[in-house]
Image (spheres, one colour):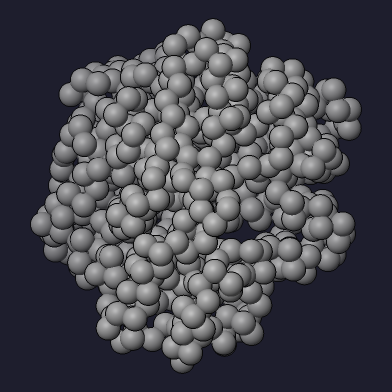
Length: 593
């Protein structure tokens, strides 16, 4: 993985190379192994490289193929790059490197914008056509790799992180009221194309954006499962178990493609344990696995080492275990929030950040289990939504999932900070009303997987790992596996407390204690219960002059939250003070007044 940046001028002037340099430098942690720049005509590109595929300098970026008249910058990994390379060689293309970036360049030359349909992997990239000046921006099907844009009448800029765009300068940093409403409705999630800043937007997942030389733009959505049934598998649990087992096995195997060692983040839950089991089944030896825990706080345990140890012993992995003392959290929180492209309230962000710091000392690539709960309906609120029926799906989703009502959000925010309408409910209704998705559960999963999940937890994993130059791969977001799961009958997902078909697969390769354990999470008790060092930082941020000037939140409401920091909870049980504070700390950390 890497960091990319660029500028496209619309006013006839040359690109601001200094701004592109600043954007590129801001992403050094994402790509500590190399740096490059390129400019021609109205376009300039920058790149930071993390060497994972083709470790030689032949894979350096920006990558130019003068014969084809193309230059590209790429972030991510194309897992089928070797197969595509062989196919392209058969079509007459000659390669000068072994990198997947060059495969993307040749694929674009061969198939144009349709090249994305041939790529299996996680990616965001930009391709410049020398002869036309056209720029094409692409994001992968599930939005695993980020791509931010900012634009005005004179130019368009893009980068892998929002802070990189801020480093370029000239960004409207006022708060977007609709995005703020979404942030407070969906525990910190703001789906594409919005961000909390009015001046920054995201390329949506599964999107090809074409920027013409005259500045006009058009988007093409190139992938979206229908969430309807497959006739060939019917409703036979055994047939679905076999199909899912094969698909997960393929997804895991694909993500071992690398020219560096690959490890696994092993929490001891079903998803990460299944990854380890399938790698062992595939003959992988000396597999490095990593687990992290925190000190207990307020009577709540902060680790799940019992389960991760069980899996590590079962499969003989080279297991690494890290226990983080609570006194490390204040500094770790600062670092984690600094690494966020957007404010994220899930307190396990700090856990991922600390874990990635340690893992990056051992390997450059890790597999992790994120996404399985959304893809296979593993969360406790899905049965409630499913029971509502298709017509009542939107209302049931809001009742089960939202943190606050529109009225509660309006009461929490300061004057002018809230939109006049219930923006979050309107968003859900529009998604639920789209064609396809036969049942209420289908509609809810489509919403989660394609609209919300890219911005939590996928963004969280990307931001926290890439802060240390660590590439995280997510097998459960393999697009073919997602297509299969989207077609799976709801009852085969909802049974057994959720993820039934995946649990059936797990029982064929894992200890029953892992499959049948209570659902866990990545606990950070000191954040959840506002331990004194955490509360001190929260109080400092919310009473700072910048916070008072900004006036995002009603001062009376903030005072109420600070007076009882562990009492006020959202409808889904999250710490309400932490949600408010994270936004303000993020704004201050990134110098946004």
